[in-house]
Image (cartoon, rainbow, N blue to C red):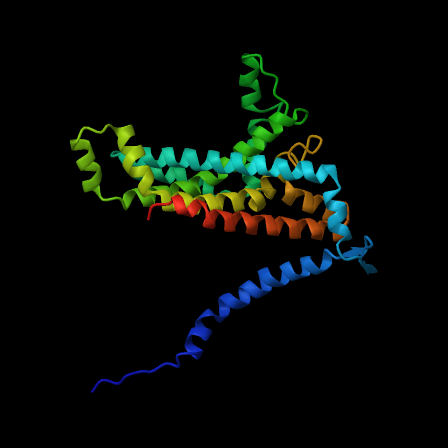
Length: 293
């Protein structure tokens, strides 16, 4: 005789999601609430006294021309990193799908960079592009290009964009490859029989069918560029030269932990949080309409 086990319809779901709820509350909601509260305070460098000043920190923030420049620099940086990482990953996934011999080794080599920590990724690029010891400045010198990212702001920005994009390519590659493998082979074969070449098949069949993955990666890569690139920038340029590579998340660290402006730093973190929330909402509201599921 079979025995039926009955679970409480209310307690069981709560029990199953309780660990995730606690992680979200402790590591996300609580710090966000603390930052929001601290953004209304002016504190001394030692945290011994504080004064509630309402929106004065935000007013000072948006009156600061350096902060506004950092705002637009972050927009350019995130756009370049997301666009470069996603486009290269898409091309590599397209080639990987067509590889027959050595497919496993090819895909493994492309995935390896994702296992590298951001700080180590930055250190690798620093060594390769060191003006004195690096191999790439030596090669660039042969074609009359003087490389020194410690003095040239444009070169420094290009270096951190390349390092940040390189670190994220492997992550994007995995998702694009999985999306391409889920496309029915019969659709690709039918288009080939109709006379469509490889490029035409890619743009008219493969790329539209992986648009949900592209939309997902767009959101992930922008969030990555805003937050997870801190370690790369800190290892490569430390925000220099002359703040040429200082983005919003690095300015939060620099003002809060180096300059000890705790209230202003908290205000910056709140603004950064709202920027990412608004961008994500806009993407889901407007960009998702162009996605074909």
